[in-house]
Image (spheres, rainbow, N blue to C red):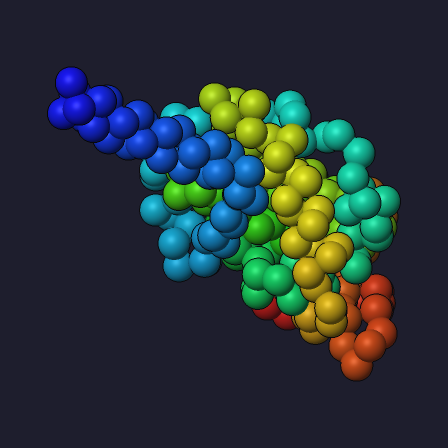
Length: 194
């Protein structure tokens, strides 16, 4: 009888530890891995069949009320350079001026969940545009909360950057930057590289 009780206790401990580990994992923040520009093609291939959605990513958060020009500096500080900028898209067969962006950051979250964030209207709006995989829509609110925390609480010093942006609505080019503690959004002629 003692042997049987011993084995029951062992099985219970093993089962409990597995449940406890799973429960603990549910309360860990999602882990963001930024996709580097050199890995963009592999990301595109891996997630080619993904059905994208913004559902679950538009619950109000602090980052929705922050100017995009500042969010770009916070993203730079937290994750480094964007995955894609206007310079990467310009002149490609699928590029259209109406789809102009200033930047895109692509992520793989927890090793399996794809997510992309990009600017709304270059440096002229607040917030970002978010898209994630529809099959992980239940995780999207948690992902957004974690992104908000990463950008608003963990970034102590903004990252410097320089971008180029074309606004089709304004028919105007801009140099957008955060340098030496100052934000700039300066009009310019079409840059030579474009």
